[in-house]
Image 1 (cartoon, rainbow, N blue to C red):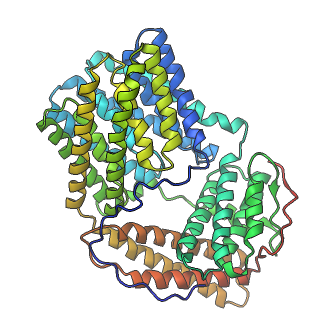
Image 2 (image 1 turned 45 degrees about the vertical axis):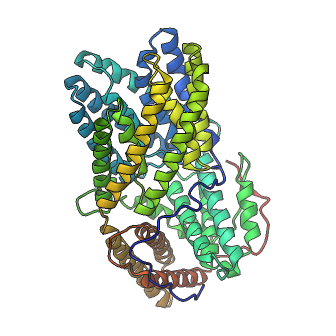
Image 3 (image 1 turned 60 degrees about the vertical axis):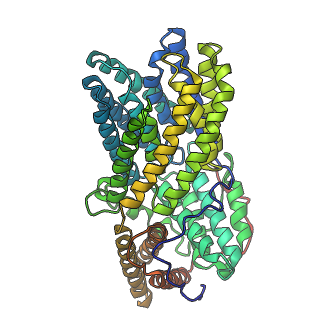
Length: 561
């Protein structure tokens, strides 16, 4: 492994980046899945309401339909649970918003309710690790509903419409499993193999190898989490597990690994062809993987990540304060839709202050470009209700097709779509919509970022200390087993897997903390040394287990999916 000296201490206050914030990246491998899913989920409810001449109810239907954006990376057993929880969370948030709207028209109270809802949505989405688009869609719907005219008698019907559309979104999200039941697991395994190959290509010594190692470790960890949540261990999943072990071996011994067999296996996982073979373990049994034991271990409940002393608490507090201040600033300026400023602030908050700044720049640029696009498409959308619905569907597709390249590019389509949704209840003057959107964007971004600076997150450093302790304990456990004459294979495998997971958590904690302001100096030298020692121990564990390295390219035979 690399023996590069520890890096020097980072300054307590980092410069806020501008270079690269707007740079376009490669699109997601599955960008078309959320893009097509959201169109299929939104179109039938909206077209039905169009036929019934009740487009004024479209917002409630879209509350459920937009749930189709979630959980596309999860295996179908886990996706079914995640989508169901997203639908329930969406309907629950909508219920609170509609009840508040029905009980009061006081904008000050409604902004406060919206800010508290946004904070809860942020905390729960981060704790459950639901993935993109996170809390933003939930906050957009619930905040808009707060300012929709409402009576108590209308609330049940509106919630029923949202729940029905959410049920349809659940079916849309699960439908691809009929054609590719192991698709998410195959993609996660292929990603792990490609990331491990990229790290192996550095030999563990080239410039940038630390970044490649972190990416490979995260990809391998993600593949294991995907497989462990996939349900029954079918022959296909067992074959994929062996391939992930190959990726783990390359991660532990990059200098001894040929990356080409890994890439060949990753390519073979595309489509529905046979899963390439990965050879057998020296013991000749899958028990060495320890997967059954890991499945039997109790999972950590997501709510354990919540609480006054957890790292998520400052992020939730930032969201509450920033959203409230943004909404009140918008009210003070006389803007008619303070929920837009509230949503802008809610969309900013990321794992640390540096990422929050980057997201703020992306949001402002994307929204300002988006209002120009709205000015261009508004005449087309105003040709009639059908044109309005079809334009929104096209913008839904464009958002998901572009947002994986860079957040600002997706925001270019989100902005006109959000403005057009407000016209489902009745046509509005475009100039006023544009003016209010620009004002709310600038206000929400500025006030939201100021709140992020004011609400410090000193617990980020504590998270690094906890992660360092976990890595050291996992490394010591593996080292003790290595010192034994004949360690139990399953114990050694469990120790290796635990150390690998601890190293992933340490890198994530260090990356998050390094972008925070106003905290004590981080132990960068200890982090680097812990990673070096941990990966050396991983390599020693792999050699002790006798796991075979990729020095051939025989990937022609495989297991049928």
